[in-house]
Each structure stands twice: as structure tokens, then as C-alpha cells.
Length: 194
Image (cartoon, rainbow, N blue to C red; front, top):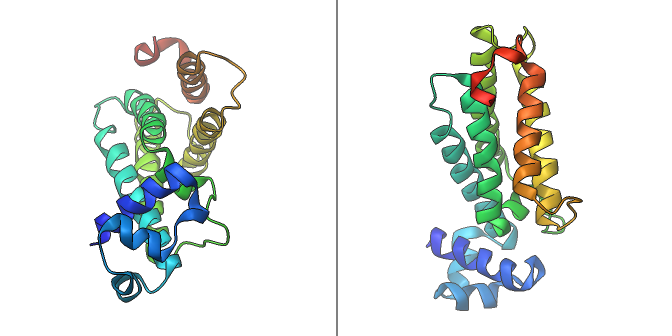
């Protein structure tokens, strides 16, 4: 039932916005009884929390799948591309996760743990780059946060159609290369970013 309700919520958000997600409409869209939503999720906050957690679990999986290169620099680049692809392919999910489209929504502790896992996927690869001396010694959490913030900013501008440049692919790819090259111990030696 959870997946049907999450998917129905995302369809409604995509077509009419978060404010259109009501118990009655959600029940109709998901093919369940309204009372079952209350019984399973407690209230609409519980529904949005399920959407948030579902999104971050999928997102962590996407980042993990794209972190497998032997070269951590290549992994970071691939994770950066995967970040944008996830957002563009799942704009409603991304909006609930990152763009605060649900007024007053605060994620539960369990959902924040799922969000933290996606960040941890990035931090691990940054640490690998530090440990292999490809990045200068630094705090892996701080570097991961800087990469995350930069990718998020570019993606949010694109989703909100506020990007200054028409070719958002090229702009984003150059952003990733600039970010990662700036962290390298020897930027000119990185074949991974050629």
C-alpha cells in the first residue's frame, strides 16, 4: 500500500502541486479507502514523510550504483551526473526532498536517516579521493557538503527554469569538472576529467 500511496502522491504533486494532495483525492488515486490512509500513515504529514523517505532511499541507491569506479575522481563525476539525472527524471520527488514544496512539512528522524545515507555515499567517495592522495588533505564531510550544495544549486535553478544558459547539460558538466578539478592535488594529471 505504501508504494501505491507514494506514487499517487507524486502524480498529484506533478499535476496540481502539493496542496492538491488530500486524503480523499489520494485514496481515489491510489485505489484505497480513505480510512486506510489514516490507519497506515496517521495523517497527511505521514504521507509526505513516506514520500520523502522513499525519495532519499532511491536517491542513495542511485548514488551508490554510480560510485563504483576504481578511480574516486571518476566516481565523483559519475555521482554528480547521477544527481542531476535523478532530479530531472523525478522532479516531484526531488521537490519534496529538497525544494520544500509541502508547506510546514518536517521530515521524521527515520526519514532524515535515509537522507543522511545519500550524503554518506558522497562523503565515502570524497574520503577515497583524499586517502588516495588525489585530493589535498581535508575534511571529507566539508568537501562533500560543498559538492552537494553546488550540484543542488545548479539542479534547482534548472528545475525552476532559472538557468541563465540555454545548454544546461554543458553548463552542469562544466560545473562538475570545475568543482572536482579545484579539489585535485594535481589538476593537470586528471585523465578522469579530460
